[in-house]
Amino acid sequence: KYLGATHDGHVIHDDIPTDFHLFVLVPGMDVFTGYVKLYHLASDRSIFITQDGLLGCYHGDFEEHWWKMLERDDKGSFSLVNFSTEFLLYSNADGRLGTFQGDYFEDQLFFCQRPGFGCESLDGTV
Image 1 (cartoon, rainbow, N blue to C red):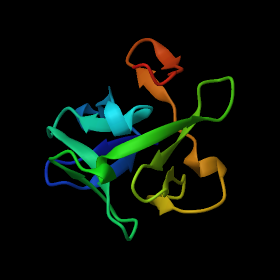
Image 2 (image 1 turned 135 degrees about the vertical axis):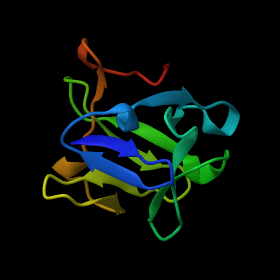
Image 3 (image 1 turned 90 degrees about the horizontal axis):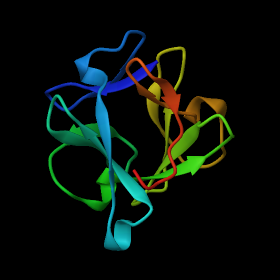
Image 4 (image 1 turned 90 degrees about the vertical axis):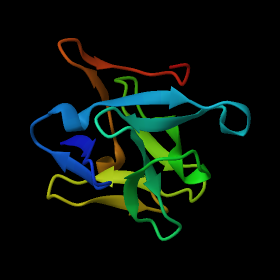
């Protein structure tokens, strides 16, 4: 599935990519060094998580906007752990999208894909 967001702040994931699935990984500075913000191009917002683990896409620059990319294998897959809550983002094939705190599961693996170029691995210096 492709991670995306809507103009009204909902985080989505779909089988077919559109403009709603384009993000820029913005590197953090100072206290956020080593973290990225998932900046959504179509809505001019970033993926955000509440202290209860609920996802949204909002304006601003809060701790809840920043994610650590944990490399999981040599194929470029990574997990996203939130700076503020330590929840991991997941996208399940059965349609569930959310966050989970605790153990590592396969539905927490993500890849970056550039249109026409396939998958690329990221090293946090984006």
